Image (cartoon, rainbow, N blue to C red; front, side, top):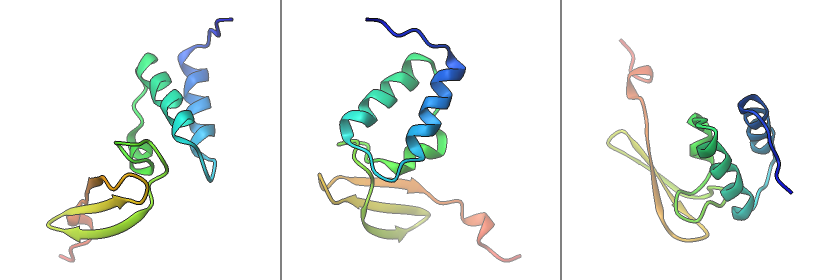
Length: 91
């Protein structure tokens, strides 16, 4: 059975998904595939999951040279997220 939805409905489903506290990597894979199909950018949601195993991103966090490095507890991969230091600097 095929499910036909439009881009707005897909966006609402993605937003509802990320409001959950916990999610599995299989569900994340489905949501990511839906976002690619309807050409929806995940934006800030990309910081919530590991890029390698697609599980909820938790682990050891270090900050160096404008990047926040998070080592995934599940697979051990390092996820780098850029930090905008200009908003933290006092002028």
